[in-house]
Amino acid sequence: MEILAKFVKALDDKHADDIVVLDMKNHSPIYDYMIITTAKNDRLAQGIIRELKDLEGISELSLKHIEGAHHAEWVLADFGTIIVHVFTPETRLEYNLEKLWADVPRVNVEGMLN
Picture 1 (cartoon, rainbow, N blue to C red):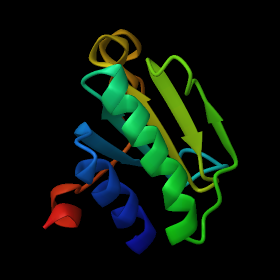
Picture 2 (picture 1 turned 135 degrees about the vertical axis):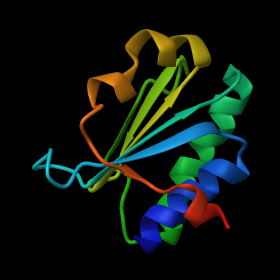
Picture 3 (picture 1 turned 120 degrees about the vertical axis):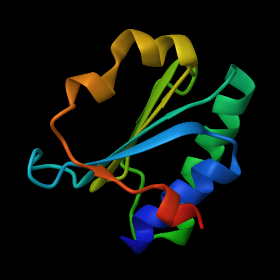
């Protein structure tokens, strides 16, 4: 949970909006947590992407793959046990992953930021 808190804090520090963490342990055999967040614009999305890449150095998780970094409308970063989705506002509404995974428990993000 400490590593997850580092991810949430790093995203918040880079002004990611509406951070949602889904506890996927009982729903996915591949990863434990899915983080969904929004970047207000492409420039902010690029900063968040750089921060995600830097997280590899401060956690024992390694960045296995990053998808969509060039367009920054939907970026997926795979850290093995943690998956991070960074959306533009329009793309997040379009794909609505929170609705797709509505039955999955959410992790209290506010507790990680205090």
